[in-house]
Length: 451
Image 1 (cartoon, rainbow, N blue to C red):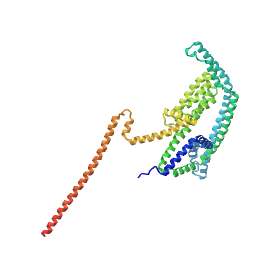
Image 2 (cartoon, rainbow, N blue to C red):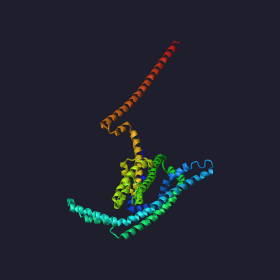
Image 3 (cartoon, rainbow, N blue to C red):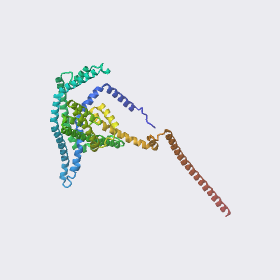
Image 4 (cartoon, one colour):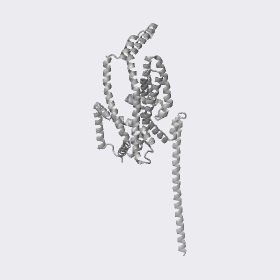
């Protein structure tokens, strides 16, 4: 007998849930503020987890490969494996970052100051070029150009580029906001580095604690699926992200070396911009190339042209050589789904969505694909035929289904007849036994009477 859903407990739960939803939508601003507060508090832990996850790859290599045999003969050295691996991981990482900063930051500052000092000249040159084009179009007496005021368009463009307010006030306001965000980001980064060290030191203990909580509060039948999701997420998101960061760093370094060798202006700024934007799938190369090309176009159109050529060559090298070797086919998505995931992720979550949208979507795609394959296999031959569009014929499919049903009915009839036949044979055997028994008894009676 089925239990009724309209029990007092279920009714009270439904009423409480409805009241909570009403309260949530009435005070949704307060909830968002509370969520933002918790997010700000937990930001150092998120940063620490991300740093620890990325550095876990070199740390694991040092711990298991480089120092794997340490302590086999003398057990006292086995205790030094983890501290040595941890120290070399962090010292080596920050040494590389410090070297890059020491190499690039002075050039970036010099290039930016040079760009700012030349910016008014670029604007004046662009305005003169626009005026010459407008004058040429006016002299051509084209029909579509009669009702267009090119002077107003040029003034609007210049006003947009230079800003309609006092440039000094704008820069000061920007610096004030930038310094506040920089101080907050510096604090979160410093705390994230400290937290990441603790994550790596106690990662085995933390993993055991998480597993104990999962086994304690999650039904056992769901645990294999949860472990599978965690494993796919690690493969699709984690390894893709780490490989993409390494790949983008190499692209930025290659671009910096090439532009510097060929004497391009603003080489360090453009290389950093191209390398950082290359982390974003699909749109990253365009995001890095278009502003860089515009900066070089203001300097010299030939610089712009050769930069586009170099960018195309570097991207071909990245797509065909570097990325397959470093990242591999971790995502397993076609170009369409990469484009879809980048657009949707960026629209929902901004820059984080641009970067993580593709690997996160790949997790859902992989799980859905596996579930679909299992469902198709369960449906058998008819589902495989329906997938093949060359032989897709609904009449044939209906006939095949009818034939399969007829075969099953025939098998059931045969089983029933066999069962009934066995039953009739048993009845005949019983009747024959009873007749033989009666004959034996009558024969015995006859012999007894004769005696």
